[in-house]
Image (tube, rainbow, N blue to C red; front, side):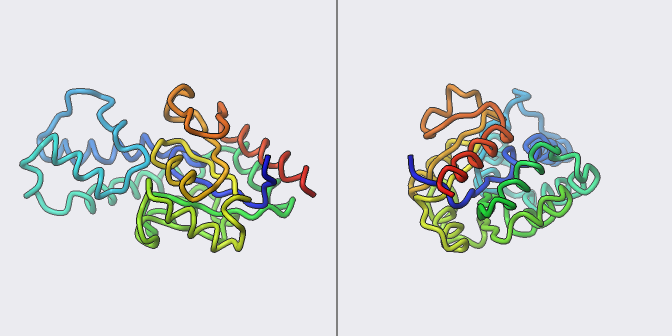
Length: 223
């Protein structure tokens, strides 16, 4: 087992409960344009993807929306309003405590998210988690987004820690592929997908607090 000096966290679905808000924001866009997806779970395909990739999925289902204007910005306005309304309720005290314990133990922390920087800043501030993450890498600041390894490489570099000494917390396959490609220790949390679908990870946990606690234990072993 490689020792852990840093933890790099995915954001949506991993440290904040925002996947449902993303889907609700897209549903509001579709409602305004008179579109109705066949399945209530149609947004599952969005997990771990950038907004441009999500837009491609939307336009694949409803081709006429390709000419409907800036749907991504419309969706983002909806999402930001929901985040601000819910505030700290988009995360929980167990996650805050887990991050605080890691920080206090000298473990470096970063975020690597498929969201854009503006959204990431709003989400982290609203949730009260911004204080834990001096390094935030987003889809519009990295050379390539997940599943490419660039985001995790950039986060590790920002922390001045070798990727092999970084644990990566993820809830999506695209994120796990990204982190693994960068050489990180991959920790999957079954918050969004069932554990059986997360087997590409080095370790799978039932929850984010459990993964944070395990990371702290591993970090203490090297101390």
